[in-house]
Image 1 (cartoon, rainbow, N blue to C red):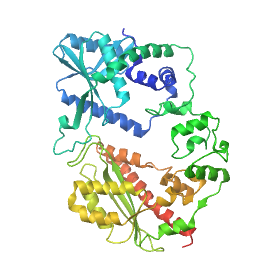
Image 2: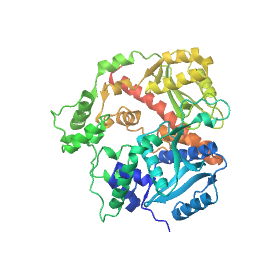
Image 3: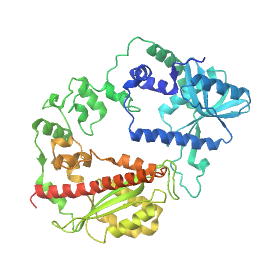
Image 4: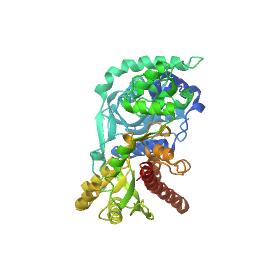
Length: 494
C-alpha cells in the first residue's frame, strides 16, 4: 500500500507556517468552519478545472470516488499509464512520501506534460511552488517530464457566442521558473516530515504569515488569545504595523500610550475608544449636505462575478449588476417611495437592469449612494457594453453624491464604528435598532453567491426564498442610507 505524509496542499501549508501544517494533519477538528463564500470559491475552482479538461479531450478521469482512497488512485493511475493512456485527468502519484494529484497530464513523444489549472487570472509564487512539488514527485517516481504549465484565466477575453476555450484560458510554461525551487522542495519535504513526526505542536507565535498568502484555516484557533478591542482592530492600519505594536507588548487599544505616534485617522479611533466620546464636525457635515438636491434617490446595486462569462460582451470575473433598490424622498418630511429590481437569473440581466433603473431615477434630484466608486464603476461598464445608453448614464453619474464621505473623512465618528466607515459599522453605531445581523443575506458577497446559485436551482420554494432574501437585503441597504441621512440632518439641526 502506498504511503504518504505530505500532499501538494499540506506542503503549501508548511511553507506558510509549520504550525498550520501540524494542525492540518493532527488536529483537523480545530479548523475554522468554511463560510458559504469559501465553499463557493472552492466550487468555482473545481468547475474551472473540469472546463479546462476540454482543452485536452478524450482523457481518462482517474480521480477516485472517495478522496481517501489514495492508494487506489495511485494504483489506478499507474495501470492506465501501463495500458497506454496518453491523457489523464486527476492522475495520482507518490514519491518520497509526497502525494500529488495532477489536474491534467498529456504524453507527447514519450515524455509527459503537466498542466495545473487555476481559477485565477495570473500566476502567483504559491502556484510555482505547487508546480515544483508536482515536478519533483513525478520526476522522482521515474517519469520523464517535458514541460509543466499553469493554465489560468485570460481576464482580457470577451465572450462573443460560445465560450472559446483557447482564448478563455492562458497556458504558460513554468518549467524554467521552478528549476531553482526543486532543491528547496527536497529540503522542505524532509523538514516537513520531521515536523509531522514531532510529539508536540510547533511553538509558533502569530504573525504576518497568518494571512499571507492566504488566511490560515486555523486562524481562529491561533488567535483566540487576542482580546476584543485590540490593536488588530485599528481600521486600515497595515498588518505589519499592527504586528509591531503586538511585539512591543501593546495589545489592547487601552495599552497604546497617549503620546504614541499615530496618524490622524488611527488616533481618532483610539482616542474615541478610550474616551467613549463621539466626534461630530457640524460645519463640515453641513457643507457636505449642501450638495444634496431634492428629490433624493437613495440607490444601491448588487452584482455577481462569474468566472466563466455568461453573456456576450462580458469578461471573466466582470461585475454583472443584477439587482437594485431605490428609496425616494421627494422632500424632508415626505413619505418614502420604494422601487426595486431583481433580474431573472436565467437571462442576461444588464439590459433590463439599466432600462428599469433609468426609468426609476427620474430626470433630476441627487442620487445618493454609499461608496460611489462601485455604482459608477458598474454604470461605466454598462456604457462600454451597451453604448446606446451613454448619454442617459452620463446624466445619472453627474447626479450621484456619496453618503460615505462624512464617515470616511471622520466628520462624524463614534467609537462603535471601530475605525470603519463601512455602512455595516456606521448603521448600527448611529441607529442600533437597524442591523444586518439576523438577515439570511446580510452582505454583498453572500448576495452575489446566492444569486449565482439561483441559476442551478429547480426547487421553486427555495428559489422564492432566496429571491425574497435578496430583495430584503438590498431594500435595507437603501433604507439604511435614508435613515443615516436623516440622522446627519438631525445632528446639525437642519
